[in-house]
Length: 208
Image 1 (spheres, helix red, strand yellow):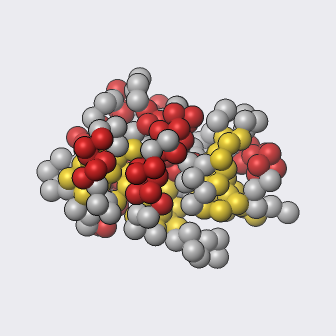
Image 2 (cartoon, one colour):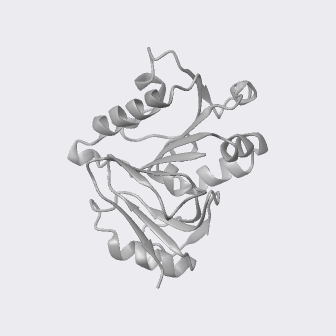
């Protein structure tokens, strides 16, 4: 398995389209035949840049089949697809939507490639914050063991917040990911090896 975990975008900084472009290029380099799109963190979008159907729109004309995890027949059609987990404010809905559907959870845990952004990246870790201050910590999917992730890292000056979250969760590792930037991870070799996509910063912290 390989993870491509993007730190999201700050729309007031004009980062929406650059993030979309970078996600699209990253996915195209992986040459999937189909993608299972996990949209549960943004079921009621308020941002025009990430309105309903935005992912299918950016992937049109690529020849890649886009399957929607909200549609049961699409999930049934998904045979070893690339998984894309988009971000959004509804972190609890994201966790619930995945964990309450064994088929979707199984597809994610057995995927060769997972591409995600913002809260979609956060959920891949063992621990995930639900609130802005990092006081309410819940279990994520646990693909990255003993880890918690903070997106929008430099843009929101979240360096101290990540340290706080690590202490709250008793997590051994913390990952900070800037916007329009991704950390590329093989969970089997993390944290000894990882790579980066994009011009922003990625920081991997270790407790103690």
